[in-house]
View 1 (cartoon, helix red, strand yellow):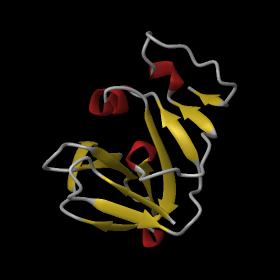
View 2 (cartoon, one colour; view 1 turned 45 degrees about the vertical axis):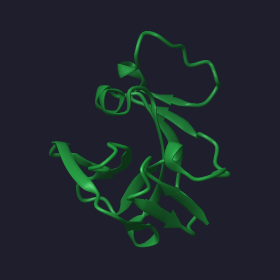
View 3 (tube, rainbow, N blue to C red; view 1 turned 180 degrees about the vertical axis):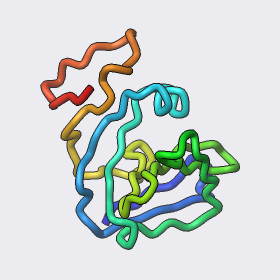
View 4 (cartoon, rainbow, N blue to C red; view 1 turned 90 degrees about the vertical axis):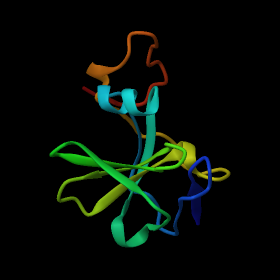
Length: 123
C-alpha cells in the first residue's frame, strides 16, 4: 500500500496498485508549479483513493493539476480523457518502493542541473 498526503494533511491518498511508471517531469509547467523537477507515478483512477478538498487547475486543455487549497502542495496530474492519475512521489509517506524509469520533457529542463543518472530521457 502506498499512502501520501499534502503538507498540512488535509488531503490524503492511497493505492494498493502497483504504479504503471515512475517518472520525473522537466516541463516548464511542472517546474513553475513545483519549484523544480516533479517526480510522480501513475495508477488507474479506480485504484487511487483521494480524500480532502483537492483544487483542480487546468493550465491547458490537455491536463489538470490537483493541489491543496490550504497548503498549496502540488499532488496530482491528470491528462484529459485518460484513465490514470499521477501522484507526487514527494508526497508519499515513507518509502514508495519505486525507482524512476524515465525523465520526460527534458528539452524544457532548467539549465541549472545535469541529468547524469543513466535513466532514459524523452524530449
